[in-house]
Amino acid sequence: MPDSDATPTAAVEAIREGLPAEAFDWLKEELDLTTSDLAEVVQISRRTVSRRKKEGRLKPGESERVLRLIRLYQRAAEVVGGRGEARKWMQEPNRALGEASPLQFADTEPGARRVERLLGQIEHGVFT
Image (tube, rainbow, N blue to C red; front, top):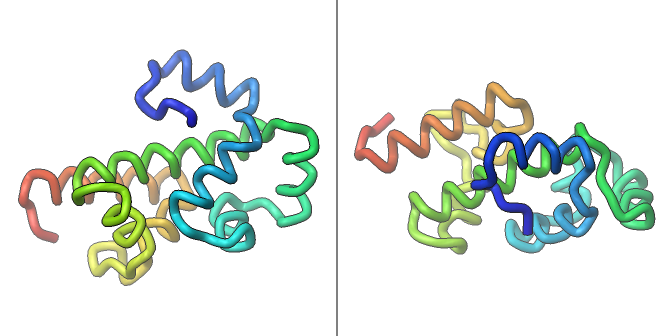
């Protein structure tokens, strides 16, 4: 799957090219979400998801949003103790995020940055 630790230049190029449509499905499976649920967070319609699968690539904006979620999920797996725990953590309401789940909160770049900061706080034992 997309390398969320790639250099910024590589990430920018991957976004500009458009991620493979399989990146959406990989993330959907990893987070145990329905197509509708992930499409809502990524801000594309189910119909568009279907069209992208046929085309084979996501558009740049969609790629950026999917890569952002992949990056957060992988970071959460590092911090909270593995993929299963990260899946759970990403979907549970979080007091530090106003009871939104990290997944819901990360639907914008500023929200994703807040989730990243929260993961850093958890990693360093700073309770919010």
